[in-house]
Image: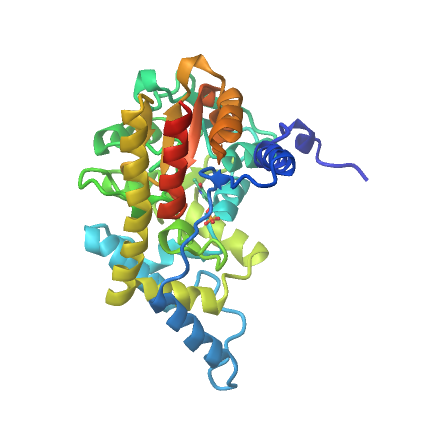
Amino acid sequence: MKINENYLELSDNYLFADIAKRVRTFKAEHPKVDVISLGIGDVTQPLVPAVLEALHKATDEMGVATTFRGYGPERGYDFLREAIVEHNFRARGIDIAADEIFVSDGTKSDTGNFQELLSADCVVAVTDPVYPVYVDSNVMAGRSIVTLPCTAENGFVPELPKEHVDVIYLCYPNNPTGTTLSHKELYQWVDYAIKNDALILYDAAYEAYIQSEKVPHSIYEVPGAKHCAVEFHSYSKTAGFTGVRCGYTIVPKKVSARDADGKVVSLNALWNRRQCTKFNGSSYLSQRAAEAIYTPEGKKQIKTTIDYYMENARIMREELAELGFKVYGGQDAPYLWVHTPNNMTSWKFFEWMLHSAHVVCTPGAGFGPSGEGYVRLTAFGTHENTEKALRRIANRL
Ligand code: PLP
């Protein structure tokens, strides 16, 4: 039995395991110290009441023969797909049809799996720093990867590739930098994709955190995107579904690729075929829970939670800037990208934060070479811990 050798090409991504190990060691040596994590990418606030109510109701339905649900429709229940069309797209003047939506168990699986539809010789471009799933899933498939550095020098806006690429992963608002692209910047990518017969895989997992009127919530706000872009959405950070699991992917019917003979193939049809074979849906409970965020109460309640996190982001941004740090992001995203002081490496600053301020951050170098010299802080903590962490940093400087 031989393995897929591509797996051996994966870099040892021990980032979060490495962080956890260093924190464990520190805590063992300093058992009385209370360590605060600003490194976590998981949410801390509970599900909102509208979601809980929907979950309870759906659970009761599952216990009665007449309302029990077994396997659901492959693309997701109509009630959820119609709510998505109405509230996430039509309300913004974007025309997406329900059969262009595929409900999933979250964005990690879909961004990781979508590449299966593409030929192994496709050249893939990713921004650097990057959410590692895009890179690793393509390395597993043996593809070559082009990186597009995003640094303070270019305002964290990736430049168009010099060589031809077939696929481009974009994630905005961005994890880890917390930065966004304007309509105009996004248009350049759509234009590139159309002119170069390329596909954009657009991860909009943090779309709900956008505060500014000007920042696009969806790539489909840009003319032409329905011909060249697939978009991924997640309820994880939108509504605290990291444990519930639900998301959705838009594969417009106009997005196509070619087979070896040059014949045009619809990616919507191919993704449907792939999902029908390998995926059995997000649970009825999760989909009813997701539907509840589109009710007037649900909308209000999830906004309160998002505002809670964004208040953390605002406090962090302002106080760190006042302390003299160069801080990016955190305005339309729950992530702050902080330049390390005195040219410290990401890991050196991580150690300083842990040992001096007893605060955990995420070393930027773990997200790619252009992340060196930065750390990522998240706004997903409680107000109390966020403020306490900032006081400690201020006191130790
Ligand atoms: N995409 C990005 C950019 C993320 O940062 C994350 C989670 O941290 C995900 C996707 C995963 O989302 P989900 O929980 O829906 O799988």
